[in-house]
Length: 331
Image (cartoon, rainbow, N blue to C red; front, side):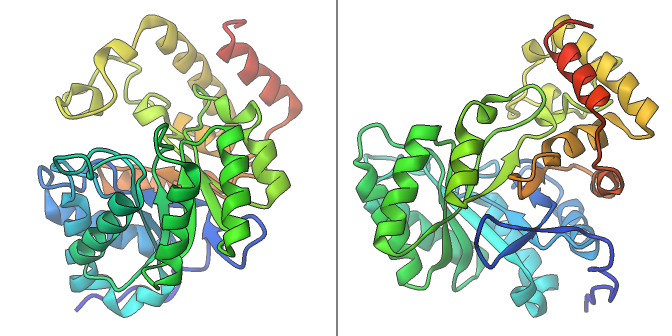
C-alpha cells in the first residue's frame, strides 16, 4: 500500500489563483505526453507519485490526452485507484474538452452536448465523482460563447466540477467569457495559455485581462515542449519528443535559429547556477499574475529537476534585458 511522505508540503510554493480561495503549486504536472496507452504505465505511475511527494497537488489532463485519446485519463484513474485515492481531497484534478474526441458532429468544439458528454466520459475513465477544474479547451468559432460558458456553469452546478476554466482564448474572448461566467454565478477560476520564452503572445493583452479580472493563469508548454532544455543542444535524442511520430514538437521546429538562442540562454542559465529548464520555468513564474507553470515529464528525474527551479525565481533587470536581447536576435 502506497503511503505519501509526511514532508510533501515542506518545500513547494503555492500561489493564489486569481482572487479565488484556491492556491496551486507553482509547478503543476501535465499528462499531455508520456501517460497514454503507448507509454510505460509503471513509469507514468512513478512520476505521478514522485510529483505528489514533492508537493505537486495539481494534475492536469484533457479528454484527448494519450495517445490513444482518453488513455491518459484511464491511466491516471488507475494510479488514483492504486495509490492516491486516500489523498483525493489533497488534489486538484483538471480535465478539458474542445478538441476532436469521437466521430460525428457532437465530438468536437464547444457545444453544450459535447462538453457535458465529454465530462461524463472523463469522470468515468478516471473513476471520479467530480473534477476540480473543467476547461473549455479552445474557443468555438461557430458555437455562441454563451452556450459554451453555460455548459461550464452547468458542469459546476451539477457537482461534476468545482471550478470552471478556459484555455487558448485570446484577450477579447477571455474578457467576454469571464463576464458571462460571472453573470451566471460561476466565476472563471483560471486560464491556461501557451506561454514560454518562445511564445510570448499572452503578454500582448491576455495577462492584463486576467490580472484586472482576478483570474488565475497556468502556462502550458513553458519549456516549449523540451526545446528550452539541454536536450537539443547537440542534436535530437532518440527518445525526445521531436523524434516520436505522435509528438507535437517536430524536427522542423528545431532549426539553427532556435538552437542559437537556446545555446545563448543556456549560457546565461549556467551563470545563474541553473539548468536552462529551471531558468525557463523561473522566467514564466516571474510575473505575479502567473499562478503556475505546467510541466511535462518522461522521467522522475525531470520532475525533481524542474521543481528545483523554485529555489531561484529572481531575475535582475540585467538578466531580463539579456534574455530579451537573445530572444529578439540581438545577441
